[in-house]
Image (cartoon, rainbow, N blue to C red; front, side, top):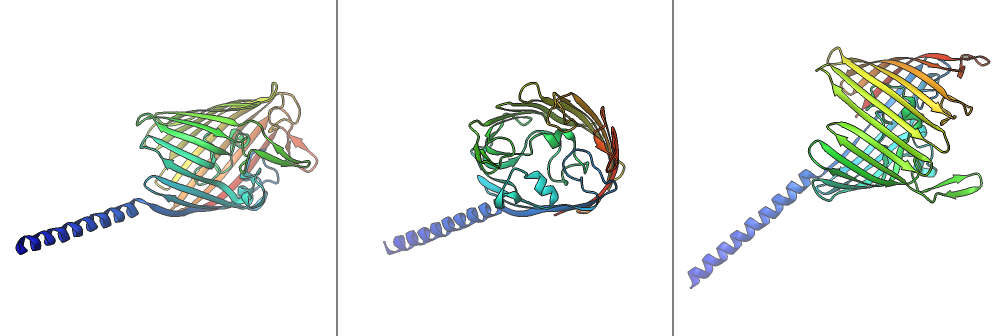
Length: 346
């Protein structure tokens, strides 16, 4: 009996040791799966001309600052968060509807992986529409298109990302009014205006091509964003959008983004954009209620060495009316400008 008790006690201790080791291993594996990261970028540039096209960012003459971008993120097994902060002129333009301390918050959201196929996200996140984004690191061209500049920058709300298969995805979302990041209200000269309606977003992803819809009161935007690798060195991106605003006002556009890699470190790319406004649109290229159109051609070179990228860029804008300043007293229907940008990502 004593031998049996001793053997039983030894087995129990051994089982406890194995169980503890398994729990410790599981804890270590969970810790390895979770990741905390700090990333971001800085950008600065020189613009040759005193006047710039009516698009966002890269529009200050002479030597100018872009922004400092710091992104803090945590990715756990089931959940995580992103806190994205921006400082500088580019960041100020990106969060133009934010007030107080929120005017440095580009994105702030938490997410939960309900399953391998469903993720819920709540907070403020950059828009799902369009080919271009706020961070210059993810854009090939340094200056931005009219479609991006006058479309939404960000949304605050909740969205569900659903993986229908390996190549097909669906996003459904409910948001505040576009670019109102802190709540569904605006602070104007008379006090606070409360919006009584929300925006609704849908995105269908098909084999790397995306059909996007954003709709709300007096606003409907249908957008297509995609691209194809035509060879190992040649990529063609495309963005097309049409937007209906209050009354008959609206805007539409299409842009092609061919990019050719000449070496491992140097790529040259072109953005050709046609942008039209109806009944005044958003006032991008027309200050009246008339129809207006603009053609923009941007040629950009991109040389990278490690985390450092330099981008020389030449851009020509042409409109159907004299809308661009050519001097302090004269206007013109075309504008040419040269920009060279330096970007460092980490």
